[in-house]
Length: 270
Image (cartoon, rainbow, N blue to C red; front, side, top):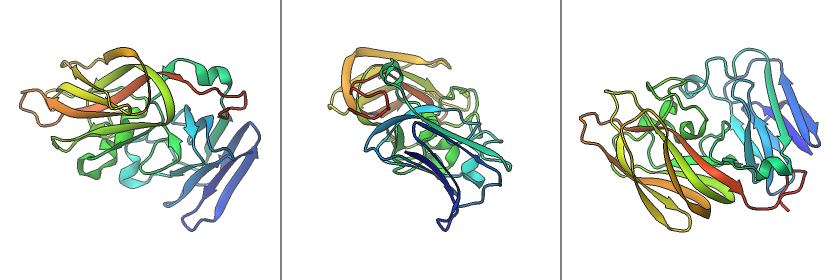
């Protein structure tokens, strides 16, 4: 049984809906600060298409338990589209993924539902620094599916910013073992405001490291390698160019591959 809940700051349930394989929920009041969106499902691991707001679209994600999503307000909202979570009518949707959907070759990094902390929803991005702690420079922006990189700041120009920290690193966790063979990086390209990284080291969960040269471009930069099975990867040892700007940043990280665990037609791991 899948269950959507919208709860207020005190934990009171304002809306609820249930479904076996899929469930939608329509909320007909404005969100209030402190509201949380919960998606509950009984399995220890399940693949679902999840949409927490009609403006965000859907991502195929892996839930280790349940999804807990805090409705963004104020500064935390400006990395989302202006009409996301706004107004007095909201649509949430979730559906168990099919075996064919789970097994397809795809971008395993994208998750429009990602947030700070342990949300129980993978993939999940985190970093050892985010510029001034601002939402528009949070790690989650690097996996939201938006590749617009010609400016910085409010949506759609959110990125992962490193606050000039030389040891900055970003970790992408998959929550299970996957097989990957291609990475695409979109560096932020708001030149001349921005600098750019001329080299990145990619560390994988098997402790293999790849040192990869990068160029100054607004296009995605592809890194390919023999298929490898991992549970996470990390971008580290980011070396900026000699240009005067102190502001390199990452707009999007894509990681292509397949799930390697067998799954039943109900979307649960078998």
